[in-house]
Image (cartoon, rainbow, N blue to C red):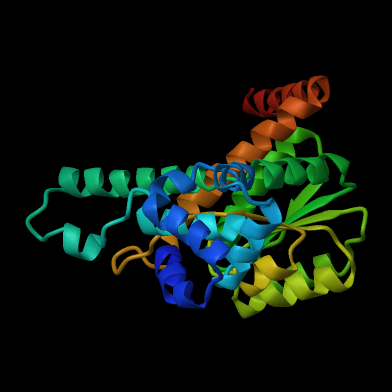
Amino acid sequence: METMNGTARIRGAYSTLSKKEQRIADYILKQPEQIIHHTINQVADDLDVAESTVFRFCQRVGFKGYQALKIALASDVVAPLQDIHEDITETDTALEIAEKIFSTNGKTIESTRQILEGVSLEKAVELFLGARRIEFFGSGGSAVVALDAYHKFVRSGLQVSAMLESHMQLMSASQLTTADVAVVISHSGASKETLDIAKLLKEKGVPMIAITNYAKSPLSKIADVSLYTVSQETAFRSEALASRIAELSLIDALFTAVMMRRGEAARTSLQQMREAISMRRI
């Protein structure tokens, strides 16, 4: 699936837009770097139009909504990630290669931070706090991220689980209810194994949080809450390696927010786990 190009889509649709929509297009094209920091309210206020007008504009140019447009703009302009195939040479030392990799990872995290939506994060935290049980799903490299999420959240005192094998994931998903929460992780949001699970969860009415790189992916369309990463994979770092850094950071943020909300209950859970581990070492 191709990464969305925000400015190109706006320019391509420009001639078909109304005069009011062209005003919005001009405003965005003139300062895309600033738009990724603005809320839809700010854009509407600056242009003296209704928020619904800005939202409809986003849909007219091919995006699900304002957040999806911001993600595309971030991919265009926020610390663009250079192709490591071109940037790293055979004459580079190990240290030079490491520095370039760290730089790329840093840009991925920063790009993702720029397009984080507070409302979606809050919804995800609330779902976690109200769930009877939380299960993390992912296939391939995303399964590793799901396991990391389990490793973190098992400290929270909440009932959490994660299966790595696809058939076991389907079996486990079949037992979830509307009282539970599923977190589905997929860089593309389009892998068959992941979508099979997501469709089953949707049929059962299980609240679903998606962590993905694409706002218009099949997964993001059926999830109740979507959290997005911004990354560009390259020849030497395929398999969504760069995005995995951002996914792990998103999960860290969710974990910390949940722990802060749980207060004393979270501290008690952490203490019990530390005591159990320390006894094992004796």
